[in-house]
Length: 112
Length: 316
Image 1: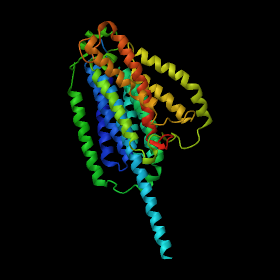
Image 2: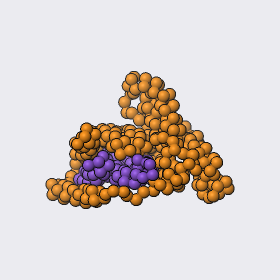
Image 3: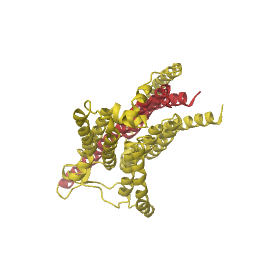
Image 4: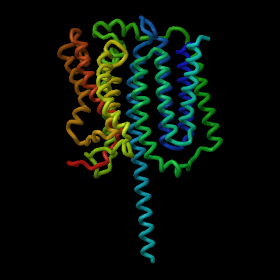
């Protein structure tokens, strides 16, 4: 088995692992991680496609490789936005919980 | 089986084991560290299938910058982790998910193993026009010439992500600076590193961006390395995080895509159309665009890691 086929199979296995992680993990941060695993698995499949197109003296077809480079940057942008949303959601939850406990202690002091 | 085959198999097993760790690890922090390791191992796989440009990008952005972003998030979400066990998927659900995933893997693997010999390729096309641009690296030619519009729009995606992250700011903090990267006081060793490393890092990143015209490297990789230098300085708190309302910061962010668009429009006048380069100046124009793209990437990646503004600015 060549390194290329092996990389393609690794990509397939990564897509499966990531899919399992997205379905099973509860925490949103872990879902983002698993989603990134699927993404890099798909990129590896592009690597396999690039290697199969190795002609004209090139070790691999440059077009799929260029797409993967663009893809890695776009995947990072999406991850950063998802993390931003997640952290903001967490902050709001903490703020709401704090406001709720404040209300409760206010009510208690009213009664006494 | 040669030694190289053994190493390849070992690498694949290692990549999959670390990937599985990021799924099953108990703590978020451990999973994130696993993910960074995974990114570095994956860049070795990319190097093994002769995709050095991708390997550099994966190591710099896929592992390094993404890892920093995730570590910051894992630390901030630590309190949430313990309370958040509701909605856990039960045994039957897990088995179902596992069966589905295995089916997907088997189907994909069957397709890959059945694909034999030469696949369709655009490499001859890429090679034929390469001398026209004065470039030696076909990937740079694809990114900057054949599929230039993809690369330009990808920069716009980065800008949209920055706008999206900034717009999550609390009302009072708009226009201010993002919070510090590290919650604790920086380690003296880190401060020393942040003083010594950036001069070398800046030289290397300019070199990688410059050499990308003919060898593996390019604007993405150079920009990512420059961004890493900025992040080291920010982590050591040698420089404050910039206020997002500053005009200079916004000009740096848009400089890459704006230059790209301007040169693209210039193509109507001096070449055959949008994003076309005149043969005589093609390489010079491409390097000119890439210089500004490096600057944009180097600014936007750290801003995405820093997150939305938290500290009210001077002119909020």
